[in-house]
Structure formats: C-alpha cells, structure tokens
Amino acid sequence: MIELKNINYSAVDKNDIIKDLSIVFPEKKITVITGANGSGKSTLVKIIMGILKPSSGEVWMNGKDITNFSITDRARNGLTMAFQQPVSFKGITVKKLIEIANGKSLSVGQVCEYLSKVGLCAKDYVNRELSNKLSGGEMKRIELAVSLAKGGSVYLFDEPEAGIDLWSFDGLVGIFESLKDKTIIIVSHQQKILDIADNILLLGANGKYTFGTRDEIMSSIHRPRVCRALEDTHE
Amino acid sequence: MNKIDKELLEKIADLHSTPEGSYNIRKNGQSVGRKSNSDIEIITKKDKAGIDIIIRPGVKNKSVHIPVIITESGLTESVYNDFYVGENSDIVIVAGCGIHNPGKDKSEHDGIHSFHVGKNARVQYIERHYADGTDAEKVLSPTTEITLEDGAEMTLETAQLGGVTYAKRVTRAILKNDAKLIIHEKILTEFNQKAETHFNVELKGKNSSVQVISRSVAKNKSYQKFVSNVIGKNECFGHVECDAILLDRARVVSIPKIDAKCVDASLVHEAAIGKIAGDELIKLETLGLSQEDAEQVIIQGFLN
Image (cartoon, rainbow over all chains, first blue to last red; front, top):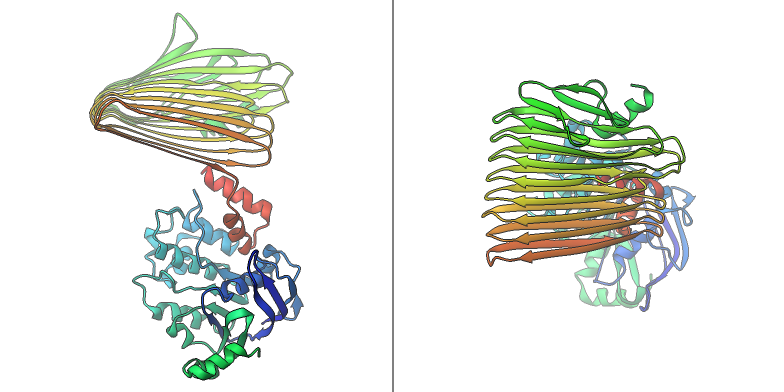
C-alpha cells in the first residue's frame, strides 16, 4: 500500500504540477494514473520511487514513512519501477541486469523464465548488451522482465505499453494479473490498460485530480460535462 | 615460481599452471621457462633482448603464451619480440606484462612486438598489463607493429586495468588487400596515473578494414590521452570508437584523425567522454544497489 499525504511538486520554470495531492493506492489492487500530457503522471511515480523529491508532503509505504528514504532504500523495501524510457548500459548484458535485479546469480534457464514472461525468445537475448542495438520495443520488454526479476510488494509501471511492438496487450495484461497480490500503479493512456484498473487516478490541469473506482472515473470521462466539472473540482 | 609470480601470471595471462602449447615466460630479464614444438618455434635473438616466434604455415587452433613478469625494483628493459605467422594459420597469442615493484626505484618494461602475418592467416593477440607493489613507478610502454598480408585477419585485445603509473601504447599497422584488423582496448587509470594510446593504421589494400574500440575509465587525478590516425589509401573501411568515463578530477583527451586519400575510402570516428550517466545510476539504484555499487557495476560493464 502506498499513501501520499499532501504532496506538492513544482518543476523548474513551471507552475505547480502537483498540488496538495493526498491519496491511498490500496494493496492487491491495480490503480491506473491517467491524464493529459504534462499533468504530472510520470512525476508522481518518480516521487513515489524517490527519483524526484516533492517540495512538500509525505510518502508512506505499508505503514512506514519513506519520504526521506533514498531510491536504494525504497527499492530494498519492496518498491519496484519499470521506466518509461529504459536505460541502456554499455557492456552490461540482459542476463547481468536481470541478475542484479534478482540479487543473485541465475542460471540461463532462470533468466529465460523472466524473458519468456514478456514474450521474448530468451536464447536470443540473454547475452545481448543493453545498448542501442536493441529496439525500443525490445528494451521495453526487457525492462518489464527486469522488474519481475527484482520483485517487490509495490510495482510502478510508467507507460508500460509504449513501444511494445508485435506483442499483444494480452501478454502485458497477463503480467499485471500475475501480480494481483501486490500493489500495482500504472501510468497509462491506453483503454485496454484502463479496462483492467480497479481504481483510476485522473490528473487534470493545474494540479487538479480525481480518484475513484474504474466505473466512477470512466463514466465521468465519457460524459464531457462531468469530465469538465472534474477538471474544475479538487476532490 | 613463488606466490607473487603466480599471481602476476594469473592476472596477465590467466595462467594457473604451465600453459598448453608453446610458451616463453620471462622473469626479471631472463627466460625462466620455454617450450617450442614443431608448429611454433621460439628462438632467442642474438643481437638484442627478445625472441622470434615462428608459426608454421597452416597451423590451426594452437596457442602461444609469452608473458613477462618483473618483481625487482629498478629493473628497466626493452624487449623485442618478432612474430612470423605463416600463411593460412589460425593462432592465439597471449602476451602481457605484470610488474610487482617492491622497492623505491622505477621498474619498466617496454615490449616492442612486430607481427608479420601471412596471407589468409588469423591471429588473436591478447595483451594485458598490470602492476602492483609500492608507490614506486611502474612503467609499461608497448609498441606493436603489424603488417597484415592479403586476406589476413588480426584481433588485438589490450587491457590495462590498474596499477600502472605510466603507459604509452603505440600501435602501427599496415593492411593489404582484404586484410582486417580489430582492436579492443580497455584502460583503467586512477590516482596520478597516466596512460597514452597512439594508433596509426594505414589501409593500403583494397577491401581492407579496421575497427578500433577503445573504452576507458579515468578516476581520481589520472590522465589519459587517445590519439588515432586512420589513413585510407584504397577502397577500405575504418571505424574508430573511443568512449571514456570520467570520475573525480580525472582528464581524458581524445584526438581523432581520419585521413581519406582515396575517394572510395569510408572512415568513421566516434568519441564520447563524460561522467557516468545519471539515468544509469538511478536505474541500478531502483534495483537496490547503493550509488557506490552502481558505479562499480557500470564501470565493470563498460570495461567488460
């Protein structure tokens, strides 16, 4: 479970992106964060992971105040994040990164299990370098596999569907369903991802937001007047 | 062989026991072990320090080890090793030098290696440099002269991963028709160490090609200089890639030169110097590594 208390965040040279946001991301539920570009979706998951520091407010995880925890400490306490833009590393192989994530040496067979979950033919990838010689879609799937290898109690997926070429959404949805006993937070615009959400956090302009069950939020999105009303309301 | 000798040999040549195949082990200016066979003959030079290594034509899947170790302080030597690689042979050569300087005076080994690689021969040449001991100077300055005849291929893997206070590597190569040269260089400097690399490759032959990949890490106040000059004199391909990671107050200078003297020459140089990318550190931290461990993983991978 993740709880944000009165979070504020301002980017340099920009207005407040996140204003006094307080929310609980319940455990064993999938919460999708959605909203327009620039509304602060990625910023919010980076604040949860500790990559960005909020200007004020607190981050709690499973009843523990982790606001002042480093990224490393959050990761060691069970927070796991798949980046929107996977990072490339010269000289580090797919197998090595999966081993780092898992915290121990793994057999090729064990590495293959993680890669197979993201639809990659493992033998083609285990010894590949995580460099720009891999396509964006391949890097994205490997990023997901690395997250699965790391494990944890809270997963943050930042636009996991972006660039997932030639791999069905069913595979991606299958991954989220396999993590049902965890706290899942996904940044996404995609209808198919919204369809599997238990809850949705809709970020609007000027730091406004609304949070509710999928049915509540989806019905509001599909009724433009209500949607506009939500934009003007700080719930 | 004492414990220090064995450790040095392991560091520079992965040798845990007497190597298979031909070998010459040089310690403190003397040959302390040698084996020739009908495929590979090792002969002591008469006019100067060094050996001739003669690989018969057509010899395949054989290796020769010629490591050098220095465990005395104040020993300075220049050693000339000439390799004559016969046509159509396929050979692995493991060289390198390890210095353990126990005293106050400078120890230095300058290996001058000449390769005469016959037509359609293949050579994998592995050269590692390592030094430890006191703060006294430990200097290694290898010179490698390469001539690749028509269709010959050579891969040169050179690594210096710590301890050497000053190194100047000079590699000069001439490639004839269809010859191919691949150079992988890895260098790690720290403290006040200095390392210079100079590559000069002449692509004389039609369809000759060279690929140079240099990856280096400079820590503390160390200094590195990378100078490359690839000259295309025919229809040929040359690619030089120099990447360096800087830490602390280190400095890296990269001076690329590509010189196309033929309209059909295709030459590329890429160079990048910078600190460890912030997103690489952050990614590894999100996997539970401390910043220090993340830096170490990135450096090890980079030099892998």
